[in-house]
Amino acid sequence: MATTTTVETLNKTPLNAIHRAAGARMVDFGGWDMPVEYSGIIAEHLAVRTGAGLFDVSHMGEIEVRGPQALELVNYVTSNNAAALAEGQAQYSALLYPSGGFVDDILVHRMDARHYFLCVNASNQDKDFEWIVSQNSFDAEVEFASPNYAQLAIQGPKALETLGKLTATDLAKIRYYWFERGDILGVPAIIARTGYTGEDGFEIYVPPKEAERIWTAVVEAGQDIGLIPCGLGARNTLRLEAAMSLYGHEIDDRINPYEARLGWIVKLDKGDFIGRNALLKQKESGLTRRLAGLEMRGRGIARDGYRVFAGSQDVGWVTSGSPAPFLQKNIGLCMLPVSASHPGQRIEVAVRQRHVEAEVVPAPFYSRKN
Amino acid sequence: MYPEEYGYTEEHEWVKADGDQATIGITHHAQDQLGDVVFVELPKVGTQLHATISFGTVESVKAVSDIYAPVGGKVIQVNESLIDAPERLNDDPHGDGWLVKIQLSDKNELKTLMTANDYQQYIAAESES
Image (cartoon, rainbow over all chains, first blue to last red; front, side, top):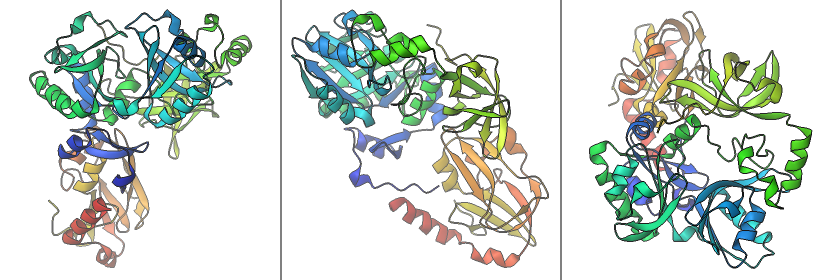
């Protein structure tokens, strides 16, 4: 269980010094030196479910598309319908290969009719940028904008109350999956009501040089309501309880949106886009496999990559598995044949040398009430 | 932090010898690296442990970690309280969070263990690399 990190070669966010000074446990996360936990994954997870948590997600990538045909390019390389977005609105979407498999899952923000702001996964950002550029036969410019932004996520039922102390922007008016170009401490910021925890909250994009000041101010502003800094460990358990996909686990270049139960981000009738033909064929021929939720019934924890059995047959694998700190269950997402993917299906997860009983259950495992 | 009378391994287990018997656990450093422990899997009483061979598993929220036998011996007692309260491994790794007690096969194997001082130097060097 040795952990060796060659810090010199890892990418660092503008908040790296703050994490290290605070004694956060740092890990190599896809080439980034990131905090995996501050006070402990369970405490951080519960803080986000009941109060608020603050995450440094500056490793995420930003790509900006501008020009007279910005919308045409974005709509051609993504599966959801960017034309349906109003100014100030965001949507979850996918960059797909012609095969229908994922290049990445992304957030598309419409800044204005000629300007789209994409938030993409950290470890995919170079690949995504090159992919979009390679598909750009439109009158549009594509900018790799990651160095221009630090990204912080303030998540939890008390996120609004906390962030509200630091901005003149009326946060209550920002609806879920909308954003404002406002300010935090007088600094220009994109303030989006989005997140990756299954909780209400905000993701803010700010200039890197202001990141430390804003981080410190959010921590102070949230002290009385129990806000704590959180690492990527809690971010993962939170998104898993909410059954949100993680690239490299639920989705990758060999899995299409239908299999990942993300058919709602595929708009076949919006016009041509990359992957459309393959998805049309998939829809006609029907699915053979799809993601399902699982809950352990026997004593054991499902982990990423463990095999899943149904009636002694090896039928699939766990894409993400973990203890669920808020639900206090051992849960997971898994890829199963459609015939074995219905709630109530008895399955077994191979945990080391044993087969441990589990059951297919509806996902998400957790949905907030507000 | 690290009791002087215990012996330690590079895999972050400790051994407290008492005559022909010994208690085995994981170190403070090990539990700190793991984070919140949520699951412990231990052998049954009567199981023969062999030095350097895995005999159990400790899982935290984020990680699975094998536990290796620091010395050989037959299991005479298992800390059953960890099944319902695995967090004891975080709260008191060198005490209430012990894992198993064994009847030592060969007391000479105790000589292979690190002293508390050696172990502390070992983990300091490990975290620098």
